[in-house]
Length: 288
Image (tube, rainbow, N blue to C red; front, top):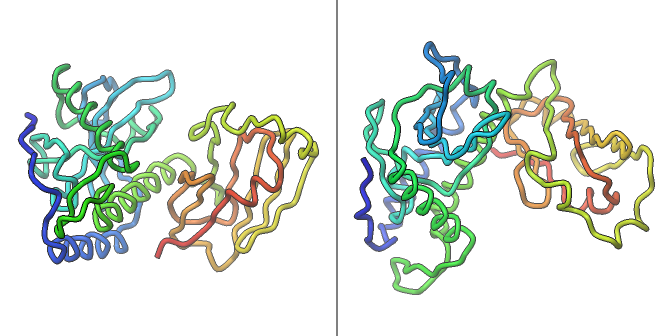
């Protein structure tokens, strides 16, 4: 099921990659970025299952771990040209025949799995180990740990600009799909801060003297925010010209939301933070 003979240079011709990336971005702009319910959803999902989420673009993933509230998924790319040549290939019997391991992972709640996910395959324990090892390798490459050879023969780090752009856009697309299914209702989007950061992530002793308990109004270029430190909520009232458009919310470099903006986005379970930390680390931008 798994092809491990992928040891060739990461040096495809740039023109081929550029054309493929252009096609991918064209499809991405036309996609609705929402999920479709399935007739035979996963009601008994297991580690090692290969699942698919249906939208304008099918999204494949491998279940790596079960939790009390959902599953941890390593996502699989259906675009072999834009995937790393170091990515393992998996054979599946579905709309396409081959997918590639990606460096993208996410938590998917059971209410999404039971409504939108369909099982299309399964790997053995041995194959699962190989996939997870390959996933960790790809994450290390994405983080610049390993040097690669470019088409010019000059050593570089990462996957190269074009493939890194693909993985970034694909990550944003997947986050957008999951957020749309989880939070888009009543013109309000809700995001759990602890899905992305641990409680201890921002614990810095020197912050204590900077904190002021209570409610605060924070203004940035494209939103007005209400931060309630006691309740642990951050309400973002998005600028009118952003509403209904596809955009991204980032905090400390992590994508908290990628999808269509509504008037208000609420982040809950926010730890006690200085106002300056919120202003310096929060980014709201359109992804045209």
